[in-house]
Image (cartoon, rainbow over all chains, first blue to last red):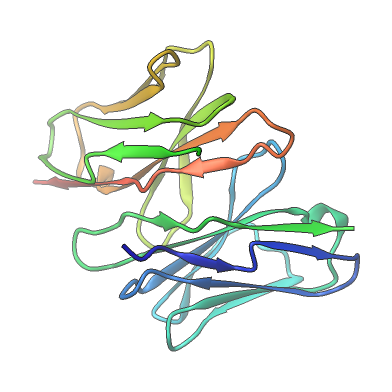
Length: 114
Length: 113
């Protein structure tokens, strides 16, 4: 079965650079979620989109932005990167078909800021 | 390969009834196991976190158990309410420098009146 695809799987950037993470949800899933997990920490919810509109916002820094496109894939744009942005970034998708709320997580993108 | 498997995939119960969700994992070396509740389109809410030495932990109507020998965990919900309808996700973290987490696919719980 198709799963959530994230790219790239690994990314190394320097401080003050920008990064773009991509997430391709499971086909026919209309909701995408982004999480950030620092070393030894719980995943922190960043933002979610439903039908290309932002549906919920968590602890996403102002330096980050995200959007969901017409094909339902989503991109997380990160600017002015800081050392503290080094983390695993997970994307998850779900379908709002009645009674289905299960989230399916991607493998994550590991971002390292040097 | 680290894996987290949850069952059942979906569950429908009547309001007021109890239910139990299962989580089996192969993450090693084990650090902790967490249960999250997530409503559609919204961020997750942490229910419990359990470490190797903890067998049972309660949070209101939620009770989580952990058997580190068999690598199984359960989340028991008592006296279910309509607001319990959500996805319940089991997340297991490894005891490594990165603390990488492995997510289960979740159990969709629907509570009907």
